[in-house]
Amino acid sequence: MSVKCPYCSSTNISHPQTGTSVASCIGALGGAASAIYTAVNSVSKQSPYVFTAATITNLILAGLAGGLSGSVFGSKLGQELDNKLFPELQCSNCQRRFSSVIALT
Ligand SMILES: [Zn+2]
Image (cartoon, rainbow, N blue to C red):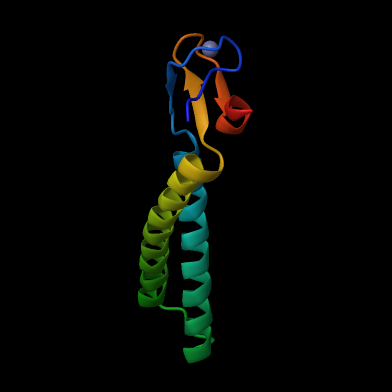
């Protein structure tokens, strides 16, 4: 399949990959939030009234670990979105951006 720019009909098209960083950021936030939520839930079941420094450290570590895994997941998801669902393309001739859906119609 050949992709053409809908504005100037140039075939000199590139993939800027802008969706990856946004999805990665959302994934990191979601991963951190879910990890902290899980950690808080498990801590409150064990000792509902004792909130020690070790507990807080565990929460921070869980948040970081969750953020990291969420970021990896989000990055993969972003690449999937970029490559398959909503690949945003940029024309190297007129520098305009457009969806590949528009370019193929
Ligand atoms: Zn163009």
